Amino acid sequence: MSATMPRPPRSAYDQAQGLAFFPRTLDKIRLHAAGELPPDFHANLGQGADARLCRFLRIDYDKLRARTLAGGTDEEILEWCFENGRRLSDEDRLIYSKFSAKLGWRDEDIGATQRLEKFKADAGIANRDDIQTIFDFYEVDEGRKA
Image (tube, rainbow, N blue to C red):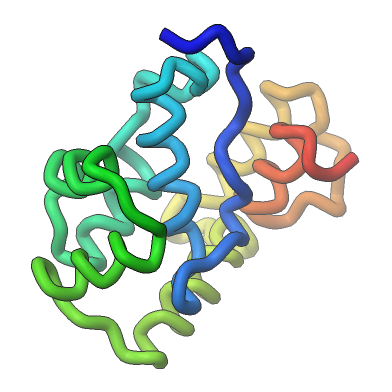
């Protein structure tokens, strides 16, 4: 276990080869293994957006975890995903990244807007109209944005 204080993972907006959220997923894996991931993230590792990303890449989360912990850059691990899951086109990466970055904005039909509103209420910031997506919420909740 590391003596370093827990810290939130990288921004969901960060990208590897144009694919948003991928660096955040890898960062959560690395931080958890090092004992540096805040405890409130532990129960959902490999679920939610991490699971959605793995399904999109057609990669098993446990295999992605093992590959990540074996070492390498985000780009090297993404290339491994392409070789062991499916290769994404530039358009695939664009569509996934834009969809993910807007999750929660007018997504009542899939429940994302309701989840975002609950996250905001639970954090005591329900009145923040500037937080319109789940990625925006992460930025504020994790201290990258006021």
